[in-house]
Length: 502
Image 1 (tube, rainbow, N blue to C red):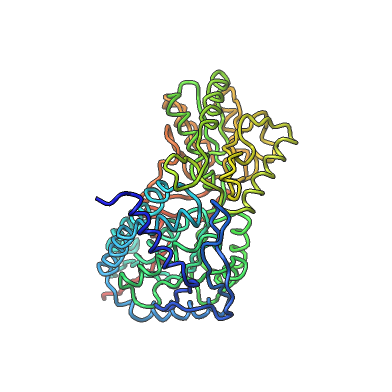
Image 2: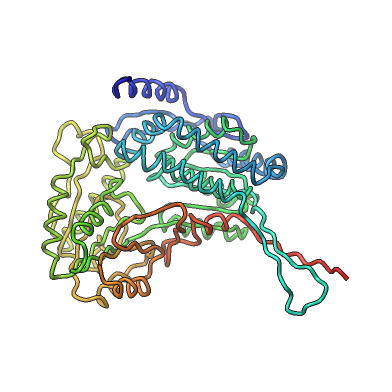
C-alpha cells in the first residue's frame, strides 16, 4: 500500500498540472478565454502565495453563456427524460468521488479549510447532495383537480422547468456551494450559468471538467469567472435569464433583488445571519459546549448560519464560559494539511482585516476579550491569514459585534435569566437564518421553536444539516428556500390545464 505522503505527492502533481495554465471559462461545452483577455490571480490563504491564474469575464462572456444555455434548454436538454437527467447527475457524483483527492487538495489550498473538512464535508458532501437531487428528477409530478363546478371537464397541473438559471455562489463553500446551485435546477430540467466567487473559483472549474466527462450536453452548464460587480451584475440584469439564485451577503442580495425586479425574475436568496445559540441550565452540558464551540469555530467561523451569539442561562454562565475559553485556548490553528490542525486561515487578507476590525470595535464598546483576538504568534503562519479563535464577553444587543455578521471565528457570549427574555433578545436582529437551543425540557423546546424568528432551529445539536431539510432564511436572511423538496420546487413552474370533454 502506498504511503499517505506518496499519495499526496501524486495528487499534488496532478493538481499542479491543472494549475499550470491559466484556467479558462466553460461555455457551451468548451474551455474558452475571456473576451477581454483579462486575467486575475487566486491566492492560497495559508501562505499568501499565488496558486493559479484565471480568465476574468465580463458582460460579453455572460451573453455567450446565456445564448448557449438557452439553445441547450430549447434543444438537446429538452429531449432528456427525467431518468436520463437522474443518470447524468449520478454519473457526476461518481466522478466527484473518483476525484476526491484532487478536489480536496484544490479546495484546501484555495479556501483554507482543514483537509479533513474539505474532504468529508465539502467534496464528499457535494457528491451526496447531487445524488439526493438525482433522485428527485424522477419524482416531479402535477396533480389532477376536481372542479368545484363539476361537469365533464378534466383539469390538471404539470410542473415544467423555469428555463435558464443564473447561479451565483459564495466563497466559503466553493465546491459544495456550486453543487447546491447545480443539482436542483438540473434535476428539474433547467440550464445554468454558474458564477463562482472570484476568491475561490478553482474547484468549480475542476468540476466543469467532470461535467464534461459525465456527458452533459453542451450548454447545459456554463461557468463564467470574474468579479461579482461585473459578472453578477450582468447575470442579474440579463433579460434572457429566468431565475437567479444567490448565496452571500444581505447587502448584495438586496441589490440583486432590485435588479431582478426589472424583468421579474424568480429569485432565491440565501443571505447573512447572526444566529443565537441558547443553552439552558438543564441542558446536557457536554453536548451544549461542543455544539456551541463547533457552531462558531468550524470553517473558521465563515458560515452564514454560524452560532455567533451564545446565550447561557446565568446559573451556568461561568461554567460554560470557562469551558469554551479552555477549548479555544487549546484549539490548534495551523496549516490546513497538518493533521493536527483544527482551524485554518481565513479566506483572504481583506477578510482577516475585516474581522480584526470588528474585534477592535468590540473592545471600544466595552467588550472583554476572554481568549484570542489576534493572529497566532507562530512565525510559520506569519504569511497566512490566520486568526486565533476569539471569545468576547460583557457586550449587549446594542453592540456592533452582537448585531452585525462578522463571518469569522468570533463568539459573543451573553448571560440570560429566563426564557421570555432570551427569546426577545434572540429576535433582536435583522437576520433570521438559524438558531440553536440546548435543553432537556420539551416545553422549552416548543416555546423556542414557536417564538424564535429563524428559518432553521437546531435542538441539542448545532448544524445538523442535510440535503433533505429545507434551508430558508426569515427577515433579511433570505428569500425562498434551498435543499429538500422546496429546493427543487423553486426551479419549476406550474402550468394549469383544463380540457372540456363535452
